[in-house]
Length: 594
Image (cartoon, rainbow, N blue to C red):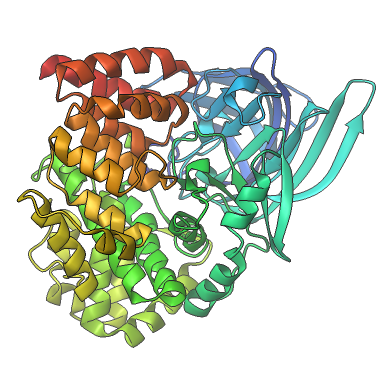
């Protein structure tokens, strides 16, 4: 018996769950889900089975004929949740579990009407990555166990359910004022990709296989912003092979969503902070689209090999960017990513084991060590391989890789064996051991260069010596180049320097959230009072961790901004997603130690 995942009670002696059928009724007044799930195993089971759960109220476990099955729910482990142990006294392939999901489920965020764009109806959405599916469904919550499912979700009749699955019927019970939405997920997915949302939603078709879902107030803006999604899909197919999920729809969530996007198959969740009005932030959607091949089709076996999901996807994202917008767009994206990588390594420390690509996460909550490292260091390792063997050869390899491992989950050892079979001795040539198992950035990190990038970097480095960009130079920069410029500015800055940036880059009116967040981070570190109102407004509305964590961290550098941070967090913490709330709480607590 071997435990395959440090974040799951599943072990290789247990038959896998291959599918489930969920019936859930959502009570928005009580903020609870009343559920029944039928769990189907790959073969008949007898004896004891260990499943993952977290804070679920298990009411009963029965065989299909209705007779009871003995079970026990153990006290909660901080990382793993509650061990849910079922003891079968006869052979079976299917069991039924009746249970309730409480409002504090780590997989859910409940929003009041005033927290939505329309401010008319409540909203609910899920976020199951990396190990929160167990907070919705008792199962083997490991990416090594892939499942299909059917779902029936009942909600008040004035709300709409969307799901990362194929939608079928909708049944309305006028007498009860309810609607039941039916879904089917025919492709086997890792449990963290189980996802749905409920709210006042409408949609617009973008192509025959993609549409945008959003609240009515922003659906037209969203449709404009992501109008080019079909071209992105076609470019991705030309690079990585056929799109295998039938549809690629997008859901714009309220601003409390803690990530830029979540690659839930058939229905990518995205933050409204991507709606800049000029399509300048579509690279996040390209990233989530790329996951349709790298991450969703081929998945890391557990969180210790998370870089297999994210490193491949960032690399693939930049290949799609290059195919659509040209080499310069990819170069600027690498430059932005390298800044994020250096920042993440600085946060952990250069010698931290959490800056390795393959990590030991035994007794470590993956949410606590989430960072850009597996994304950016992983993509640079793959870029190094690509440069070493040639792009043409690496492209053939990627196609073979996706074809061989499609709809499976793998670890780094298996990946390296596959690489070595295609390119003998290449791993030794690129010092793969250092990349995978040593902290920091290896000496042979590829240098991503262009004359335009050099120009932007020189503009940034000249700023601290009083050499400010001319109006013509500023006008010549696209949003991605402006972001690289801001990322490389010295900090803190004085009031005169920040006044120049505000007036020259029109930072009081900027709609690009990446640039705005970078400016607010610099302002917070610089104790720049003219930005305080923007900081208050931004942190009161946005819950995306990528933005709010650096701002709160920067606010810790000055007494005045520390007080502002405490005040803002106290006011907004109940509106933040549980993941974001925990991260910001940690940042606030660090103030006391400094």
